[in-house]
Length: 65
Image (tube, rainbow, N blue to C red):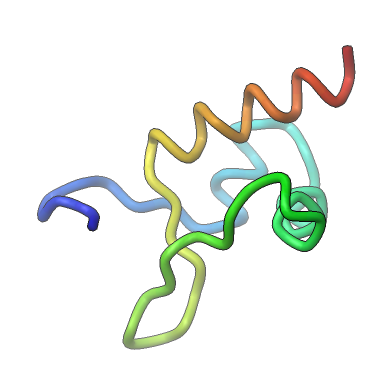
């Protein structure tokens, strides 16, 4: 569960921070490398936390190593 007040990021914001395409993040989910994140109950958009970004950064760096 995400604590109240925790900053949430869109998939595009996450992709921009990581320097990858949004499709790359979606592929990590499809391949099961990263679990599908929480979705906003109002609009259904994926919501990522700072912890998710750290995990995804580690995955991306491992993929390029």
